[in-house]
Length: 306
Image (cartoon, rainbow, N blue to C red):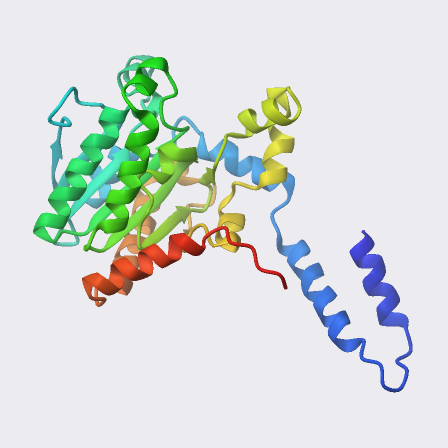
């Protein structure tokens, strides 16, 4: 409201000779236009709900619709096969790609089996194995992000969860191949960024991407997880704000009522976004691709005075 009042006062002032209010007026008008365009708190919370919708397509739903001849790879060649992470090879529009994605479950049995899409360190070891395979053979890497976060249990911490996440990020930064990451649901904290250090990061229209869940943020700030809606409005995990911050490179549109309303159309839109992103980075030399990727993440979050 203060911005609108200030704009109104400036607009009604008579310009004195030698004074320049035009620039200030334009700057404030730009800010006001942005306020009008920004998603409201209700729209932000709607994105949170849609990102978590139980019928929203998961990684394997998109694999079925986007990739041909998909062959899944299992295990980390050390301990176990963490089923919260899916890896494999398939054909994307006739071109072989390696896929790494997080997979939630539909019913209680599958959710337990997939650990609700929250990987252990072994899951990230499996992801890194797939990344190395892609780099060795020159196959582009596509990742699909949909997790509340990496599993925070005692066993995961004992097995080196933080180190696994860091090594996965470092591995992605070093890759010479084209890489595209897609936030298709919840992009939660380190569990998400572990497979998101890509040349291009896409985000579906009603996905969310943040360092903490709205409930976790509310529990810390207000000691009340029920204030999640207020927290989401404050830190804005929706696609529009992530694009504005430069955290993602493009927003992939969804069907009108969300991806779950028409998974086939959502898959076509996502496929088109991936192909467009790959087309943008294919022509770059490997060294230049790595240089740009590293520069992109080094400057992310750096504040500059206006």
